[in-house]
Length: 210
Length: 333
Figure 1 (tube, chains in turn cyan, yellow):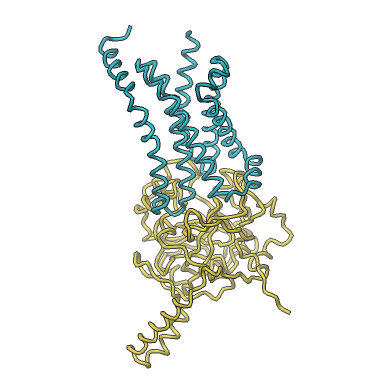
Figure 2 (cartoon, one colour):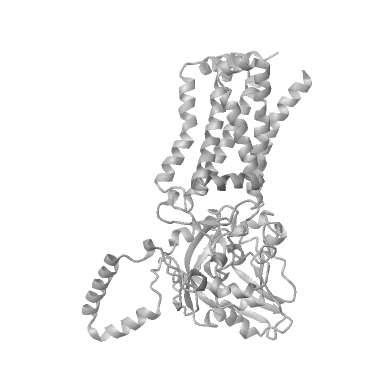
């Protein structure tokens, strides 16, 4: 049984989350980090090595949106804010968007679109390979994110496919871990691993209980 | 016929780095005007002074430390200098944090005076040198070196100091000395980064004795005509321009002569990634990235500036290549 107060508050928040403006507002908010980075890059605010700062920040934002999208279901279940489910697809597509921009920035500013060099990098370096695999999986999920794809696949198979997001979370943390391994600096990696780990653990716990 | 190429030490400046004719014509006009005002009597003296002392503009932030233009072969690259702001705000100095923006924010707690450097091990004249004694040990020279970081970026920096060999000659290494170990400051009161265990402290670096004796190996006390900022390794540091930047230890407190290869900090932390030699080598990739190209910090175009080809021994092959004759640089990276 849920306490009365919470469910009343929950329904108010649900009404608020169900407002027709919430999606456009969410969309604009999710674009802000990208807009800030572009503005900062062109106004010389990214420090001595703007290319490196841009590539890394886009990677950071991919991870943050991944945390956000995986928080939606636990938050929805724990708080009863069921209307949050409406935002899940959009947030998921923003994970894909930031991952694409991260990959594009790497290909452009680090590799100058040297496709042979990028291919060699992907094959030779586990840290790049892991990041690239994560992006390929995200591409598959983004490509099957619209309603017709759900119908075509059937909801069971669609759900199986979209559980790949857990693999993506693992690959993203591993990619970040290997990137930071050069500096032996795992504090931030640990924070993301702990958050993503507990979000996955919550799902596992719920699955085992049912 | 003598044909000058990259291989025998002729590194062409990029056309974009050559002073445009308008600029030097203006400069000549200005000098003529100044000469007219100062009177022709002082002109000859001024001219001689201008040739001997560096023309690097001082940032005006710290105490002056002038140096004469170095006559050492390869010590004065003609490439455009990286800005003082970039050189003093984009640093790897883990004792003040692992982020490259940490040292400039955190290094204020470093006290570069009083300072002593212990010289010990296999030498006839070991001893502890006071900073003032070291500053007077040999005339200061300005040297404009390329700096290539193992992370794939580079800078061009006007250092002030003298060849480390000047100090080594004074302490007289014994015949059994084969290596030199450089120990840097590790004081938790001055260095907040020591709380983290990213590396074993103190940070230790090392060179073979012949590398340490090479005239390009610099004991630096300043940059841009002023004493070193704390975040760049005050009050004295090593600069070995043909090796990746981490080989050049900052804020040195001990120099030890030994017969065994020193256990250097990065080699201990990740032996498969960082070898003892760590010579700049575009053909030997780091396990996680290629070393074939580099990004020159602050180069025109910023984000869109093209990466440069990395040169063997960071372009110092004509001066130092013979140190490694017959060595397999893929194995001894």
